[in-house]
Every structure is written in structure tokens, then in C-alpha cells.
Image (cartoon, one colour):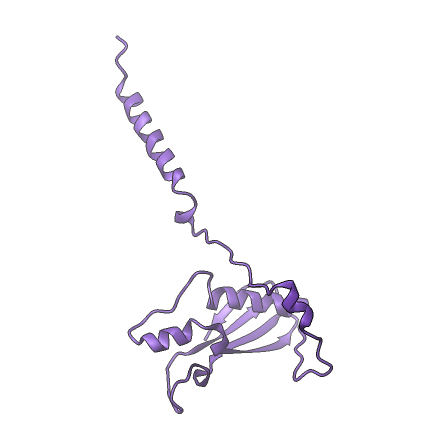
Length: 149
């Protein structure tokens, strides 16, 4: 009479599967490890002096920075890597310093953010043409992507 019922046997199997699924961590839910930027040792930093003149200065207000963060998160998603048949070009696109960014604040509720690749920084031959090597984002003041071109 103490035989487990069919429901109890299935319930124990389901509980076991659920525990195994939870043991895998958050990898199935898109969790990624945040990598902090590299910092130089304090001794090296003390030898660096502040410059007296600047070559260029860029200033952004808070809403513009928020719009840029939305475009960056979509164009360069965390953990994503470029792929393709040309290994040299893939390495080029995986470097963020390859891309130039132009930010235009149309008004308080519309920002145009354009990413374009400068292939000369990767050592590509002059005149190299790569189609679809950038994107232009239209982002509203609430941080929503309106269009990608």
C-alpha cells in the first residue's frame, strides 16, 4: 500500500530536472560576466602629467549620453563577436577603435547616432570597400530605438 502513485513519481522526476536546470546557472538567460576596464598600476599613473592643451574636446549632456549607450548596447552587444570567412576582416570588426561615431542631437526628443568603420586603422589596403560597415540609429528621448539604417 505504500507504493508511490504515478503522480508522485512524475513529480519527483520534474523536481529533479528543475534542480539540474538551476544548477546550470544563468547561462540560459543571457547572463554575461561584466569585464571591468584595465587599470594601470598606481606607480605608472603618478608619472603621467595632465596635458596643458587638448587636441579635441567632446562634451555631451546626460540625455545624449543615454542615447549613445542605447545605440552602443545594440550595435556592440556584450559578448558578441564578429564572424565571417575573412579572418583579417573579422579581427578588424572586433576592434572598437575601428569605428567612428557621429552624434547629432536633432532636438530634446530625437538623436541620430551613426557608426562607421575606418578600415585604414586595421591596415586594410587603401580604397577597400566593405558594404554594410556601419549603422545609423534614430533614438528618442526615452531611450527607444525608432529606426536603424
